[in-house]
Length: 483
Length: 109
Image 1 (cartoon, rainbow over the protein chains, first blue to last red):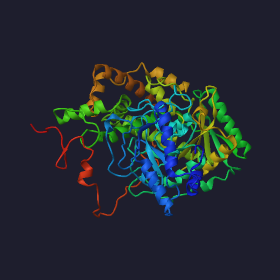
Image 2: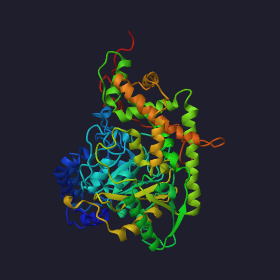
Image 3: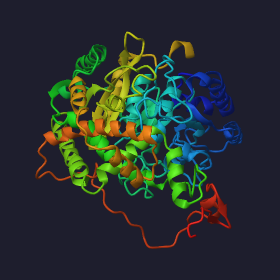
């Protein structure tokens, strides 16, 4: 059953080549066998097999079922699924079981998908290596001494190791694309407002977006077609029509203009990554695309801008964790001490660092110097994209400057860790869509990812471009030892 | 990335926030630090703020700030009563509750 696309799984289930219970058991067995080492799952849904059997019974009775009825999948542990634990990989959400349903989970459920469980992540999606996770520090399936990337590291590793058919992740500054790149899979950050954020535990509200992480482009397009729907429960959801993105997968990309921004190929990019991405560019040229050199002059200011805006929003969003209504509570004699102790014991160092930075840049006397300044630079970064998309249809660049680094390598230097996201962050400040897909391997045997960036709601074009490349490259999406 | 690394190294010498500042910010954020943590966070914040100083290279006079990626408008719904979480569900996750209410340590002496 490994290597089936969602479409093939759907057809096989309908033809009764295997049952949903068999398919689900297959994934549960793989989780049992491999997750001890990979550590991708924070929580495995013990009811999923019963749910699969119920689907099989309905199918046996000849009931009309949704397209993906009985196919298992998994969610990053900040996406709310009713009655299933949601921890954000943080001690402060220990024991939290949401009493309501998130929209993305609901749409997947409506399409027939079953949830295998919740996947590890950097605590509150803050990190680039999955090492800030409180419960499980996920390993890269290609080499378990290396990180899977972050913050959706658990989602990326679970897909790469075949521990789920696909997973949902979230991307605030590259948290879908960077781990997808480091684990050799495909990850899409949709346009801001494309997927409802209702039921996404907030990190930075003006940047966060849920997206699919999959083994193939076709699967990715199929999943976004399900979850990319306007939602009146989310005031930032945009009222645009739902699309079937699989219809874009023609493979015909002739005449498309692809921009190569010189600033994304700066010195920090390793020679291997640069070469690999350049080969992808050549492949597009051979497919009849026009390659255009472009400049996005404010790129070097993106990381600084991001860390002001994201931490400011985070410090506000994380104010709600006080030990009163949900999650972890530290024992204390007074209410005030309870707040201090709960937050001090409940949050890890990286989260505290960002709350501190966010509180500082929003505090009296510094608000204009930092926060407003960053918002103005955000305007300039956004304008770089607007200008670029007047000249080209899409932008191509490396996703991550390096292949997956060794666990522990960057943990002592927060700033170096922040720079892991240097090529992904700008897009979130602009709000467009971006996809990372595998384009080769380094001499260390680790996957290298290439990124395609698009304008608002242009996911269909990115999928077609990615699909055309995928059909040619035919790269393995899973390490041989895990097959 | 080397141009960024150089910037970081240069900035490590300048001190923007003191340990006292860090303890004050911690109070605002309802966090407690011991001496070693306060020291470490002072160092981290100074490194990060030093790097952020980079933005001052840019002249942003007459540039409008962007608070959201896309144009987002205030969305309101019809002023009509609708079902919400039940009391039972609302307190279900509370570390301590009593009679459908959140129980907290004593506030008034």
